[in-house]
Image 1: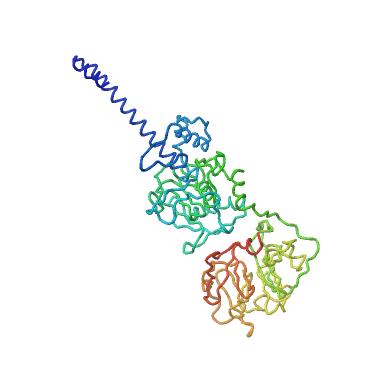
Image 2: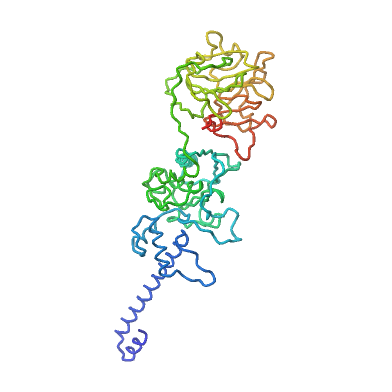
Length: 499
């Protein structure tokens, strides 16, 4: 072509020269564009596990046969017609938003420059050795409020919790957690920088590499499906990796690699995968109380809640919220919620529970608080702040308010403590009165939440319950106990009901 242009130039046919030059420039431009596209395709296929890494010594590219096989592999995960050809549909799929994890996990080349928490190229079969996992936030997105972000993350975990034997609890960011959640843009310390708005939305690690999940802050995170990226869907997908799941080639599955805002939950493929690793979810049906009256020892102090027009939520066999909880002198532990109660053993709840409070105790309505004191020699039941058919609670215990939230004998000094709202009162059995200087703020009990539902002394330790979670108190340090492996709070349904 160049010789032809020179010959034409010698014949002074300039109009032909310019035409040929234009064609030549166009030819080079097309070649450069094709090379650029192919380079991007090679990079994409390698990044997401469909093609082997290039040989750094030779810099060799894929053969045509290998390239076709890599394209077929990607087309399978993208739900495309498998042709092995780099057609427009395939190129379009490569440009869609997706997870940053490989579709096919490989073994990365070692690099001394990467930090200890490397991106999750783990062997399949990686899983957690315990089923109660904790998570915490390292950073938040400014796109949503903290409350909104935490609610979406909790809902994402709930999808997996509802369909497996796993349980998840959020811990304070000062505590150690199994899964750390971070929102960041660009390079963020793990050797795998985000690419800005579009394509890669997030990535996560297998359990053997830490289980953490990172979200690209360059994206606009939203609630729902409009004008942004659905945080709940992406988080649920990433947490699948955190639990040990790879990408699925079932395009309707949550674990498919390409973002699909039309999804609403787990696909059968996702459920089968998670249950293969961690087992099925515990069934939580409502249980009808037995017709026969249970044999129980009625040596407890109770107060019943005032009547309300608000409908109580349904009580199931594995509901970890308790209105009251106490241990009797015979070693039996009872937990109350609404008009039902459980009898607990060392492994969970006894069979046949929950049962009706009225059928066993003769008390109508729900229970505010329960106490067994000094071997359980006293029996008190209260309705509307009064001992049933007799005295008001303040007559028995001094200036204790009505409708208390919790009552317990503290193992630290043997005195009785009443809690209501964010305050507590200390009752001295020796003088039969509330000690001077009370009430005091609940914050004195360091590490407890601002509200307590119930409390008890069990095996010489004091336990506090709030909204389905529980805390064990360290009497020596006067604070919530510090447990590295299973930090507090823990789920009451798992640890007390055996769910």
